[in-house]
Length: 284
Image 1 (cartoon, rainbow, N blue to C red):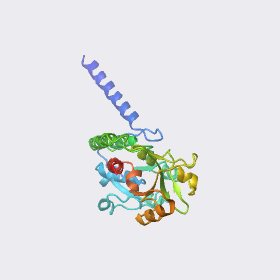
Image 2: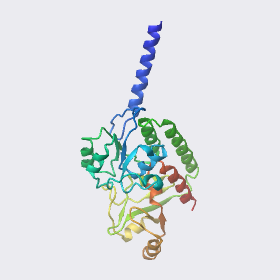
Image 3: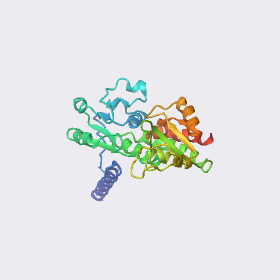
Image 4: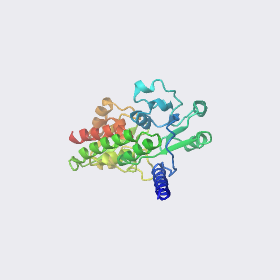
């Protein structure tokens, strides 16, 4: 009887381990194991929004490297070494930090860089949230790998509350927009982006410019202006300001609005504030 019970217990443990391993898969389908609780991980994060998420998960003490664009929370990150930008990563700086984990993103980081890092970093975690509803899974992935499941579930609950609150506003807006991220040349985003899917939550439909490009360049033409109701200027990556808003309204003869680009493009824990921010935009 005891032998049977022990066998059943072992089988249950094996099943739970298999389920956990299956759940902890990154954007490339790579499985990850939870870190040994007795050994503190050494994390380099090359994704600004996920650096913020790691801090909100209580993992700031495990961060040993970040990009220069990882700026939130400023007071915490001031002491964390920079390892370049999201595209121009300093490989040798990362090597010297001896990380156990490096977190990257398919859109933000270059594949050759990631391939090089994989030669000496034990664990590369690849992320690729495609829309706002991918955030809870991101919380659970990192929470499971770094043994902060409680904090991850708390973020999931906050996200769900913010999402449900936003959904109560569904149908209150319905307009065609052009979300502008750069000038010289003018650039926008495709419908197949996180930003466009955020906008769609409040009925803002991003105008299609080039179906083959995620961040297409464009020119202002009468035909384009006829197809949109409002121009949205993002505060990042180009630093559009209210000065641009005034000038472009006069030039284009269309309503122009300045928005906080971080709120609409940063996933991770910032997405919770992003949903609340969308609610404010929908009301105005």
